[in-house]
Amino acid sequence: MDKTRDFGVEIECLSRISEHDLCLHIRAMFRENGINHSCSTTFYGHETGDNRNMWKIKPDASVHTNRSRRGSHGYAFEIISPRLAGTEGLDILRKVLDLINSNVAVNVSCGLHVHHDIKTGEDVRLVMNAWIDHEKFFFACLPNSRQTNRYCKKWNDSRNTLNKLEIGHSRSASIIKHAVRRFWSNQYWDRYRSLNMEGWLLRGAIEFRLHSGTTEFEKIGAWIRLTQSFVVLALEGKFMNFKARTVTEFADFVRNNLSSENGTVASSSTFPHIHPDAKRKRLPRQGTKTRRMADLVLAGMWTKEEIVAILDAEFEPSNKGHNFQFTCRLSDFANMKHGFGWNIVVDENGVIKVDAMTVDAEGSGETEDHEAINWFVGRVNHFAHSFVTV
Image (cartoon, rainbow, N blue to C red; front, top):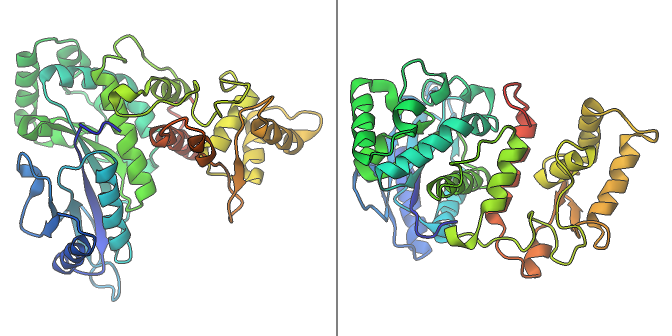
């Protein structure tokens, strides 16, 4: 992650206990862990320019609940973080989520909003330009409930929007700022976009509103890393001459352009998880059956039976069948001389995964941002929306 770029989260959820009681629990956790943060039900943290330690819990009318059901999650609110940064910020977020998960839940009316700092009108131009070209890939990793949600409308679906011609091609910071301000002030619902720029006018941050509700740190942490990587690469101008045609092409481009310059230690190989001493330094060519097998294994979401079923649905079987072929490929992937040196593990549910810790131990560097890319690809494959090409 970019340790110098602040991020923040808004977690919409349902709760068994009131805002006040949950707030007291969070405060106590901060004290017990020596964290110089606090929590309030009256302080709106995102409205202050440099809030770095106050969490906020406030009611949210967009979240639907049923208080009449005894024992149900009868309170609806959002938990708003202060400005956080780097892995230290993620660690604090993890502690908050670990604490609240015994009392909170989500439903389809909930959303997750992530903010990332940007500074200038030129920053807006670069990010907006890249977003309009690649928005569909981010929606591809989300469930159907988010595809037409009125609180995170797609930019590319709008008939009356601040489009690429109006902002993406403009190079004048003053023109961009005027256009954003005019569009926002004239149309009340404008902030309910997948990428909301209202925050840039108020506090120098843009908001990704499209993720579905969750209180799972694995999902939230991966989404923060993915969206921040996208912002950083956009600000570096990496998307100016690139427009991905498929999810795989987009994921590979982001993965291969992560570097220590934007706060992420690059892998020693072209692709993540490939052991530095392995003979093969690249994944198989896109579109091949072997590449599909590799992507499914890296996603870490499926059992062997499920992967074989996916292969049966997408490819013509070989003479010995996909079960035999996939078993052989797994052995190849783990081989150092002929493969990638992967340490392939099977968890208690039979899900096949690649243990990245083996590569980390060899000094290939931090892989969390690359893990976020693999998580993204796995989610796209899981939802398999018809509007996007994998």
